[in-house]
Length: 130
Image (cartoon, rainbow, N blue to C red):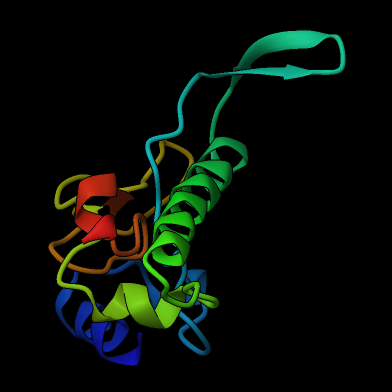
């Protein structure tokens, strides 16, 4: 992860350093289109968006891939991050936009490759299972 985060930090137009922490890991590693997922929780049926929808999307995708690996006699991925960063792509690389909102003086830009908004991008099953 270090090389892709370093590239982003050195090439993207970023908010002022006082607004973010430049030490440690870059987050997120990945993202997912996660808007208006229909869920049933106890007696609530309705839409859910954001991390609460994106995280299970990734978990489900990786579980299916681990199942395929098991059928092929291969070990499960385990901690998936090293494998994800070795791939040329995880699916769809989000290359435009930013996370600036009206109440913020600055935002992070989406760029080709890893970025501070979408990480490596959103999953495409056919890309990941290969």
